[in-house]
Length: 127
Image 1 (tube, one colour):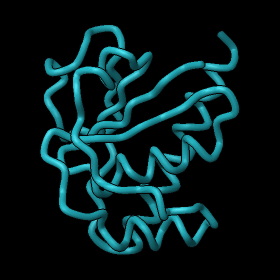
Image 2 (image 1 turned 90 degrees about the vertical axis):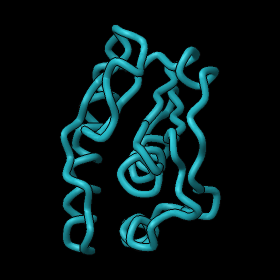
Image 3 (image 1 turned 45 degrees about the horizontal axis):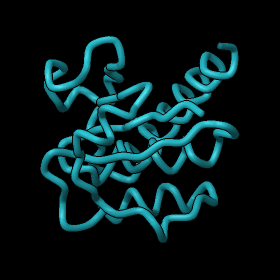
């Protein structure tokens, strides 16, 4: 099983979208998300954009990234908001996706993340 960590500063938008989408699409892999400075709650537009495509949101909440998550990860993905030198070399990927503010931007981010996750899962499944 491949473990993917999605990391973002506050863990309330893009990384939460990625965790929910990845875990919905993956068959033999798992993801978690977190950040160094987790917010008190997920952005409501994150929840709305996930519910629009029928994904459950009740177990999602901002989480603190810890060394255990990073060390056990096979792949770590950030969204242009964290310093790459914070992460183990060889595991890190940077997905440049704009931090969404409006529901239109959340939908764009969600769709972009979904496309990238589908490509990532193909790579994982072909190894």
